[in-house]
Image (cartoon, rainbow, N blue to C red; front, side, top):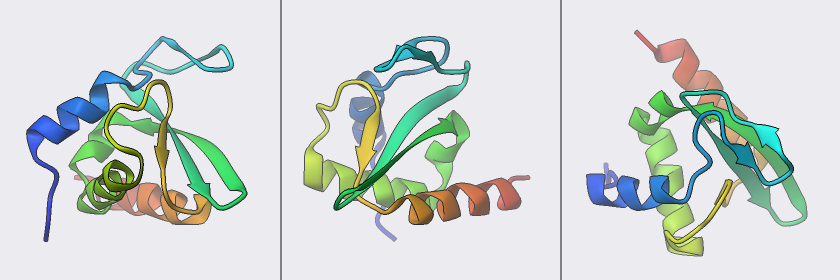
Length: 99
């Protein structure tokens, strides 16, 4: 399984809207969370995701795809190349599998 290196995670985190900052439309992001927008074709949906998702292998693979497609210089919400249902499934699975 191919995982993101810590330096790549750092690059992604640099531009993210992290806890208690406004993200784009002025909405506040809860502390310990960041904003992700799932984008597939014309379909897009905003998610507020807990930072511990950055340890989830499925989420890390999604970040790798985002890096390949969009690069690591994104500012504000992180765009990921998947449909909203796929991202919701990854988040739900992560929450079920947490210790």
